[in-house]
Amino acid sequence: MKAILFGGTGMVGQGLLRECLLDPTVERVLSIVRNPTGQQSAKLSELVHKDFFDFSPVESQLAGYDSCFYCAGLSSAGMTEESYFHATYDVTLAAAQTLARLNPPMTFLYVSGAGTDSTGKGRTMWARVKGKTENALLRLPFKAAYMFRPGVIQPLHGIQSKTASYRILYSVMNPFLPLLMRLLPQYVTTTEILGRAMIHVAQNGHPNRILETRDINNQAALAT
Image (cartoon, rainbow, N blue to C red):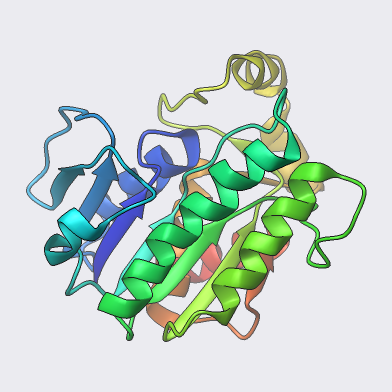
């Protein structure tokens, strides 16, 4: 598998990238970043690109891939719906539309979150925007597209969230998350499990286009 990764510096993206580099079935990963990270691996290439609304200058480097993992995202805290829509829907679709044109046989996997509103009309702003984004992605002419909606994600292997409030929350919850995962597998997963599940679905597909936390945990179990 040859994959493109967006959001490789975030918590979910770091976990996915780790699993890609460990997985012998993943041949190559192109991580698209705004700033170089300095991470080194024979499998990994970084494409530094500043304007995530326009990929025309780097289109020649985006062809020939069979999967895209879109893990980029930001908190909606303190944002208006218009600004959050622009930073979520518009940015994601700019990348996805370009890739759908360049790589029609591609499988596109998008990480949104538990509670995403597929109607796009609910009361919660971020859930509406994420739902509209999912719906737009599912309409694009990819070979397949899958929407991942994890709930609580336990970061493993030294990975941390870039959001300070999340780091505090996880530091408090970390001792209890393994137990919660056993008791509530429909709500809790880990960065490692999420990464494995996304790789497995990219390679093998799934009967559902939207995967909730329990589906994610089940897919990771199949990949072991």
